[in-house]
Length: 374
Image 1 (cartoon, rainbow, N blue to C red):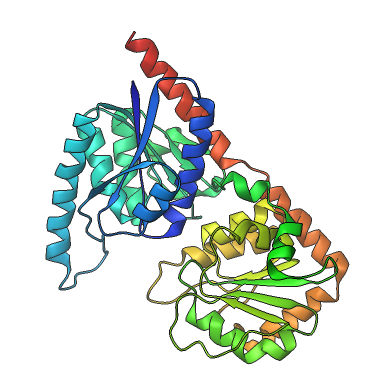
Image 2 (cartoon, one colour):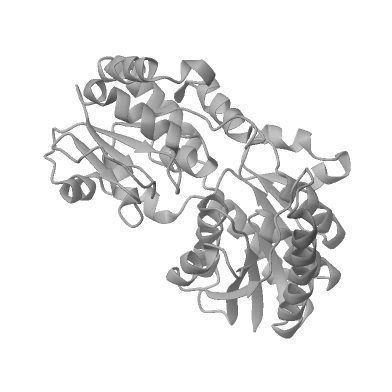
């Protein structure tokens, strides 16, 4: 039995791409005596998502990694240490031969535990510049002879010189259900005919207050050409009622691929999941990146990349207001040639099948391990 462990969590952006890789790896290893499971926070969102995908889940303590000192720093340090020992116990008991990390603060102790046992560590970074977890995890990759997968070619320059030889540019893993999504099913879910035009508004898995308020203010203009389908998040007090031209949903899960396929245009944040799932379906985007003290600027970098490629328009800072959003949306609605150029640029980026590229390397690592242990 070849046992392969995955980790990652904290947000859907650290879980869904990992699940995409796991599904592709299972397909490639079908018929072989292999088992995949996931190690994540025992209090995080990833448990539900992983178990719904049919993978075993092992929970460990997890402490948030911060670049600054707060009252939570000391207890979080103890959780990180506890997470290391809990993960090490699991990895040793389950005799894991290969370890893949999708990042997030929960991933660091398990990666360290895998390296301490001599298990090869592989990791993937979704954003344009690496986050703190990836900067820590690449050390375990180099120690064990693994690989660092990046979404963007330029990401390697942010890493230490000693690590760059271990980097493979893969693109961002996107679940297969997006690449095979059916626009007709999305329209049927919404009760719309084939001629209806859809603007899909996404603020990430938790929604986004700034985008919600912008949509509320700009809604009369946004619905001039489009039926607006809006993932609001679970924000209490959302008072804008549904109508024929406005369809709010607190959270979209199983229907997301079909609704994205049905959309003519996407307005949203620029987290890695949003931009790459949209790109996989060739969607033009209007992006309003998360910015400020609560972020390291990764969404701005992601948005600028898609803007430079011609796949997105970006509203940032004071420019991210209802008037400008409505002007941009209606401008694209009325300019089919520009939309089609943006869609083609988006699809060109999204054609990179990150899940397949990473799973291919992991399958080769499994073959190497099996060959050495015959």
